[in-house]
Length: 267
Ligand code: DGL
Image 1 (cartoon, rainbow, N blue to C red):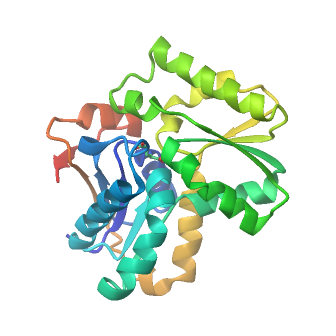
Image 2 (spheres, rainbow, N blue to C red):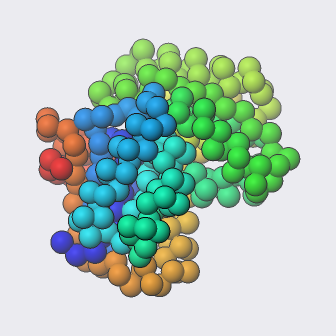
């Protein structure tokens, strides 16, 4: 296996980031790891999320990845900084790990004054979005709602059920109660684009509903231009490999979420 770009998520959600990465950077070889066996992460403690994410990053490093994207808000908010500060300098000084929060906040901070964040309980509790907005533009009004149960349903393939749509509507109502004048609503969990349509239906028409996959892919492209020392190490053969920690075959559901056939192997 050459030096691939690594993509990590707790399960299927990272595929919604991987897809736009494949579209914007088609030549770069990628290896994906979904920790489906232990998803969802969003209801776990900070320590668990940190340990599980670190295991995932180590797995991808062992596969030779010079750069890993945490295509997961929960892992980005609860584990990214610790990995960057406590693990990389001592153990992997020439490897990099990036997250998905910063690219979304950069875009939103330049394009709106009132934003709504829908995310997992762990992401909301971490206040990672609130802090990032404060750094870039403290005047932006940020409302957040935690959406427990939603990732779980998506992991089980129940995203089209009435129960799931009902949950989505409830979470949106909660957000609108906090701030009825939001301009942009961010689906700040990489699983949620898989229920984009129910969200779009529940959010009032004048509010924009945003997913982060393409923002992350665009920002990755810029990053690679600014960091030729990383970019040069990435294999450009369009190879695509998919790993999961799950025992059962998840390829069918994954292919549906990715939009074309992909084959997962056990990590
Ligand atoms: N897709 C992930 C995120 O962006 C994690 C969801 C979960 O495992 O709870 O937050």
